[in-house]
Length: 118
Length: 111
View (cartoon, each protein chain N blue to C red):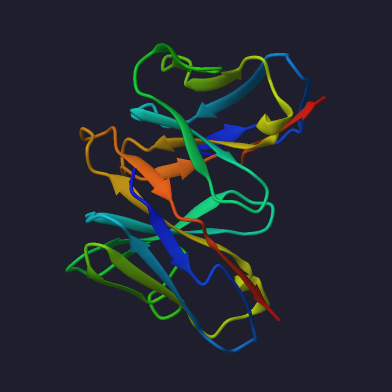
């Protein structure tokens, strides 16, 4: 599976500021995903980021709050804008294993970014 | 009804016992099923995937899928304290192709 890294690994931010999270993969991948995991909760998909096109956001998530870039096949960023304490979460990027058949896609996760908003 | 349901636990088993984790899903069109393990403070790690009805074994882990009953389970044989973690069931939804996670079951293996 691909090796995925994220920066920063954790941060403490003030209300009203923005944080950009980077996700780097050691191989080219078509599909990258951004998830949020709030304390004690499971994973919720924020958006799907494909290179060369606008990110596709899930219900409840909007581009103004979570702008995403995908400049190439190995890199993506997620920005959490105008943060509030409710944005305190773990943010995870994942990539899809492209060696599998349609309907058998497998996702692998990066180490996550732990964000605390004061 | 949640799309993917798991008992949040905690499920407590003694060391050496079999741990049985269960998951049900609502979308009959789902084709792919996954189990992720998540240690506290870490990201989810894929440990098993299954696509066909029946059992799939990998070391101490066995995934079981029953599409007619819409459930998938994970058995961990000879449980070890290092197996203590939250186990997340995930399903690729048939209609959207997106990976949907359950709430996770916390497993505690006591020495």
